[in-house]
Image (cartoon, rainbow, N blue to C red; front, side):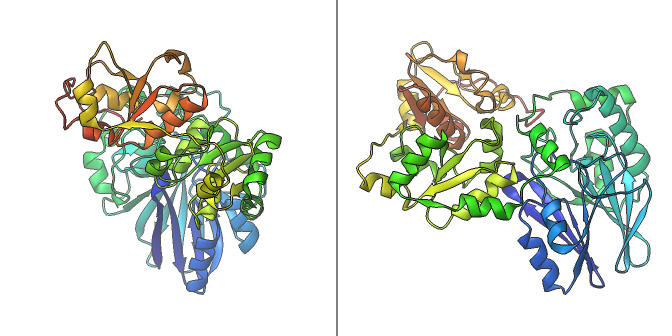
Length: 468
C-alpha cells in the first residue's frame, strides 16, 4: 500500500494518491491531470476511482478530465447530485482497491454531501481518514459555503457537530488525519501549518473536538466568519455541473501575441490584462491599465477574490517559460478564458516604444520619518483580522479582499501610502487603484514586517482569532 499527499502550496490544497496491488485512487485532484496519471503509470497501476469529498468551492477539481482519460469512476458520498455520470456511494459502503478497503463515511456539515474516506490497510485495520473540509488540523470546515441550500450556517454547523462526534471521534487515536487544506485556505478560520497528523492529537488540541454542547459548538465555528471569496460559489457550481477540458483551455491560452496583436485583442475583446511578474519588476514599469497579480505568491486565490467575471477574456504578461503555469493556475480556480500572452514580455512592449507606467515606492524608514497621523493617508490593505491584531496608529484598514465593495472609501484627489504584510498585496492594490484613476498611490516596500521595525506608533498587540 502506498499513500502520498500531493500538496499545492499556492492553494493550500491537498490531493491524495493511494495505490495497492496495481489499483490506484486519487482523492480531490486539482484541474491538471498529468501529475496523477504519471504517478500511477510509474507504479504500473490503473486509476480505479476518483474520490471527491464534496463539491469544492475554492478550486475546480480535475475529476471529469481524470475520469475521461483513465476510465476511472467518479465517486461522491450520499446526497450528492452531480450533473454528470458519477457513483453516489452509501454511508458506510466499502470500496475495494487492490488489497485495501476505503469506507465512505457521510460527514455533512461543511456541505451536506461532504464525506470522509476511511482507509483500511491489508489487514482491515483503520489506517487513515481523508477528511476533505470536514476536519482540518486545528480547525474544521466553515459551515457557510454550501451552494443552493435552505439550511443556515447554524444548521450546517449543527450537522458538523454530529458528524465529528458520531463518525470521526469514535475512531482510534492512531488513525492518521489527511485533511483537504492547510494554513492559508479560506475554507477554515485558523488551520495549522502542518498538513497531516494523528486523530488522537486532534482530540486533545483541536478546539472543535473539545467537550461542549451543540449550541457552544455552533457559536465557536461561526464566530469570526467573514464573507467568502466571490469565486467560491461559482467554482462549486462548476464542480457540480461540469466544465471545459483543461487541454482546450491550455491550447487557447498559450497563444503568443505580438505587441500589435496584443493591443488589438485588448481592444476588440475588452480583455483584462494581468501582469504576473514579480512585484519589484512591476513597480519599475508596466503596461498602463494592467493589473498586477504575481505568479510567485497566492496567484490563483487573488485572481479568484478580485476578478468577478470567470469568463472575462484575459491577456497576460509573464516571465519567459512560465506561460503554461499562468494558464494552469487560472484554470484551477475556473478562469477558463485566457486568450493569449505578450510575446517577449514587458521588454517587447518597451522596445516597441509603447507608453509605460510605474509605481512610486518608499521604504518603511522613509515613511516613519515623514509620518504624520493627520497629514498622511496610510492604507493598511491586510485582512481585518490582521489589522485588528496590530496596526500603525492612524492607518485606515482597506482590505484587498473587499476592494471591489469598498472603493467609495477612498478619494482620487488624495495621496495614499499602501502597505500589506510584505509587499505583494499592496502592489496588487496599487495597480487596481492606478487602473481606476488614482494617480497618487505610493507603495511601502517591505510592508508591515518592515514598518514594525521602525519607531512608528503601533496599537497594542492582540492575538488573531481567525485568519479570514
